Length: 600
Ligand SMILES: Nc1ncnc2c1ncn2[C@@H]1O[C@H](COP(=O)(O)OP(=O)(O)OP(=O)(O)O)[C@@H](O)[C@H]1O
Ligand SMILES: [Zn+2]
Image 1 (cartoon, rainbow, N blue to C red):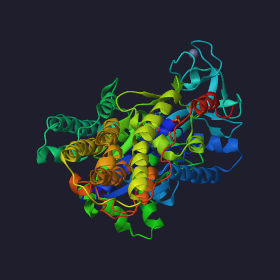
Image 2: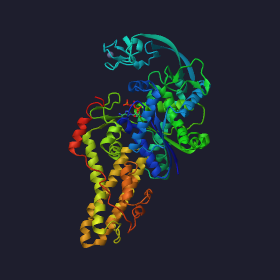
Image 3: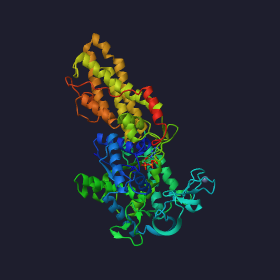
Image 4: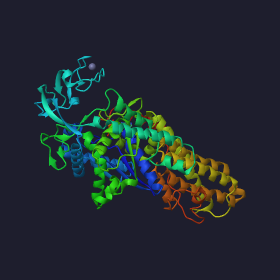
């Protein structure tokens, strides 16, 4: 049994997540966690809300609530929605937890001792009316390049030119609109990523070399190859991950130092471990610094929530305390890759302590929405709460996972959604289940029929399934999600084709025993489908297990054996319609309903 530590990029707190966020991080992580558990491995699957920073403060102000109260409420909402989507986190924590306060301050202290933190004096815009420093993007004014009057202090959205706040003509606060601004001197801490550059570069190179080596084993069936290709510690990293890391390491002047503090109220107070940090009073850590540390702190939150000890979570996170055999996989969208390949590893390596470093980073391109982009700020697209209000989780899970933006951006369209759901889920899987169970009930009653033997046709199906399940496993191990979905669909199709050509309804008239054998095998296939499909569509899988009146969810290592798990005489029930079809009227209605923006 292997031990898998799995984390999903932590969703930002300032609103309900859209389907792009879901498929870019949490959902594929859940698929992998469910699969590894199903294979009998020990899994720790952690996620949390990312709660600090200016956008959280502004969202709270807009909602008319104190920021801590706002975050508490939004965390509860996000937790409820992740339950709705059946995301099987072992814990869904909060980056504002006391555990993360302590650990972030601790890491900062270690990094300072290691000489990796520098105090830098900066000039920053202060708003007298707001009584605070303004982050660059909260200063608005006229673009000196194109004259657009809502350019931001970091960039003009109209002509895309990069700006400094002092470049803007007639600058004003985006919070209050006040133009009573002045430039003040303020001190900040920088993480000396540039000093870690060679070490990080070497680490990424090791991953690239190892990927090249592992790739040589693709297609080989030897034990050694299988080991290399199924272990996150040796699996080939996605090119998307390594190419982004390399770009940040080498483009322009190479990897830059990064500010880790901010002049804000809401956040983790800057401290060196539990000691005050002279000159840093009234400052907090910048959200990018504390957010990934929450992956670890979340382990502490899990322990607290379940009455466990420190040793229980440390055995996942400290290689000196039992985590040396842990396989750690992270999931995220492409914009998070620089932080996870460089900044967070700089924190871990720089601490000089044996914290568990990530083994494998699965990154995603973007899912777009109907000819444009999903956007939280503009309320464009379908959001998690809206999705669940119109259809159960499995419909979304299946479409999103089988169309995951792995090798390029992908697009959600209502036509494609309708077509996939109706074909894959209703026509293929749902129809198979319905035909088999109803036919059996009408001819043999609601129990697995006895009589007849398996012949060459059944043997051919068993051989085909054996091959296909091996391929499915290989794709799931490699986290090749689209390929895995394709193979699962082919496994469902194989059952339908078998049923179609074995024709139990025709056989029944002349040779009821032969028909019984076909039905017995098909009922067993339903259980097998439930076990294999559970990571993708957990609710449907549970319905099938209940209908088949079994809790034997053992993985089909031996297909022939798996297809005799339900013996003759075993009772079952015909389940309700597993997946209903989406009608054209519904599709058109949703298309219109979700064509605008959320609040408008
Ligand atoms: N359209 C998208 N497709 C796939 N993944 C996405 C998409 N947009 C964001 N992500 C990923 O979703 C995860 C959670 O994102 P987060 O909550 O930080 O929101 P975000 O990146 O600010 O997105 P948005 O601005 O659209 O809300 C991150 O890993 C991010 O990379
Ligand atoms: Zn401009």
